[in-house]
Length: 147
Image 1 (tube, rainbow, N blue to C red):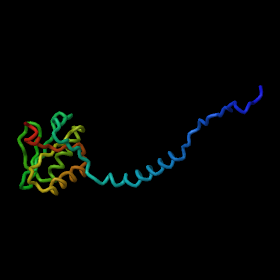
Image 2 (image 1 turned 60 degrees about the horizontal axis):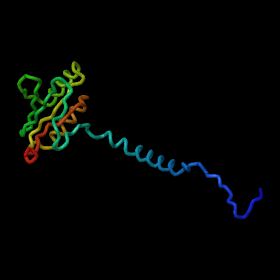
Image 3 (image 1 turned 180 degrees about the horizontal axis):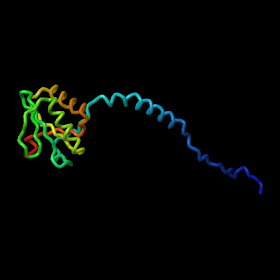
Image 4 (image 1 turned 135 degrees about the vertical axis):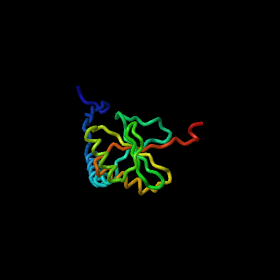
């Protein structure tokens, strides 16, 4: 068969994918993550409840509840026992001792709305230094959401 000028020549499709742009993007992302990762570890780890959420799941038998009153005093509630006023150092030592026997212990913070933010951060920092990392914050649902 002769090749006529009207006959089409079959072109072979290239089935190769150019991956060079993807490699460039991957390297840029790698650099971004390498730079930002050390900055992320400097904060305090806290699981904050969402606004208007249902009740928070508590997976330990009886969570420890730390209350901070408006005057800055710390109170610890353990199960059915009455609230006990404690200093911050004694509080963290007590929680460390309980965590030894109950590794899945959760700590819930209950603070008065008039407590300075610095006091809450100081408490959370001392809990983190004591390796008590399962910490949650107690809040009330706004009254406008109840209606």
